[in-house]
Length: 404
Image (cartoon, rainbow, N blue to C red; front, side):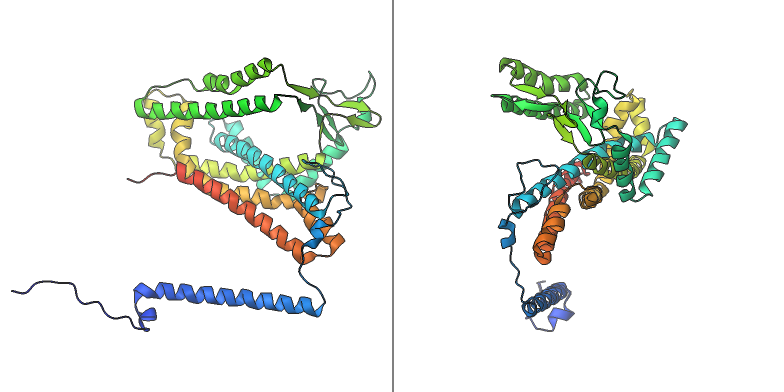
């Protein structure tokens, strides 16, 4: 009586690297890695030879030399006697600031416009369609220049706010829109001020946690808890109590007209506003189309089933449609966030000093270290792009459909 057994394993032969499907993929990958490494080695060697022939070397010592130029808007302390590294750091923070603001604003605009494009109201639907077609088919640089022109040529000069019969007046007595930027009150933190901010941040986190709990409870048991006012109470009431219990440690410094310009407060430059809103409304048009596609990807039967249970249209959108549409919306949204970060390099067109304007502009021209500056620019944009992709991919995995 014969017994079945596995055939003996064939001994490894070099020919199996190409003929055996178990090893062929690894072989081609190894060859590709060797070719890419050889290409980069050749390019590096060629660069080294050319630099040696020109009497040049790659060095980043220039980052420690005095920058000798001013930056019109800074988030940290800076003056022209500080080094190029400090100036580059200011440019990095300015880039991150405008990118963050534009990403948040573009998401809000895109979601609202995408939902309204599917409205039953004919006028609203057509207005949103006109917005999408107008803004996504015109280069973003043109929108930057248009908004910047409005900020500098249409808005009044600071001297228009002088006198009782002035043609312009400050909004709420504390906000001034001028051709030199927007002036708003500046918060002044006394002892305990940052404690209030930490309490507020904890309240915001608690509000999101409460909404998440209420949503899970609804899906698990069908019990509907109010989400609006409890979340607001959790977010603001602890911070307000901490503010008064600690003796009101946060005050406001209002802008005041002194001479030919305002003093005090915070000056948001027109170049920042132009870049911020141009990137937001331009990218928001693309996000709106992604939102519309995501909503349309949800079966109409889902909406009808939710309506048959007595849910209102707003809750159907928030609890049924959008959670399922996110799996279609989020992947292209990552690319839009990356595009906002890279398109922020157009800031030099309106004089906003981002990283491209500092490290890739003035520092490069002053020091002549083109290779080093370009390498640092590439490293920064690569790092921020990979960080955005990693964070958004984590969120994408959280909202994607889970297979059994």
